[in-house]
Amino acid sequence: MDKTRIDKWLWAARFYKTRSLATDACDGNKVKVNDANVKPAKEVKIGDHVRFSAGWFDWEVEVLAISDKRGSAAIAQTLYRETEASSAGRAAESERRRKFTEPAAEIHARPTKRDRRTLDKWRGN
Image 1: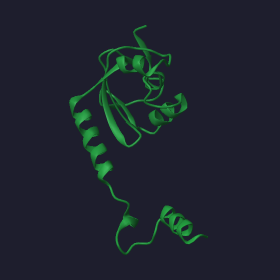
Image 2: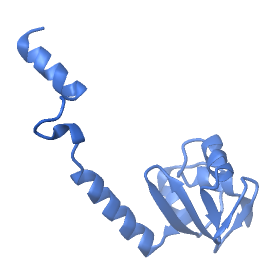
Image 3: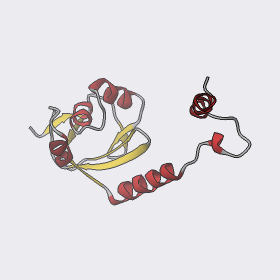
């Protein structure tokens, strides 16, 4: 097999939990192959550069192998290679999200739902 649909490949590479989510991402112009917006039926081949949004970050990967069947995570990781820029950007975003503080955690802010439950438990309600 030397080609497969982009939605099948994204699903097989475990970037999306279901194939319909991968199809929706393609329909929503969140997937680009070689810097061109694609539809779910676009065939992807080895050597293509794929850029897409999955979760909280934009991924940029190079296709190393083709598969239209979803396998284990170890097998899925052999299907692509993430670019250096994408890897560095994902690490920076992860660090930013780790250091993010809840806006309600400020001194004069309202308590969060979790804070209210803790206070109620402490008060014996």
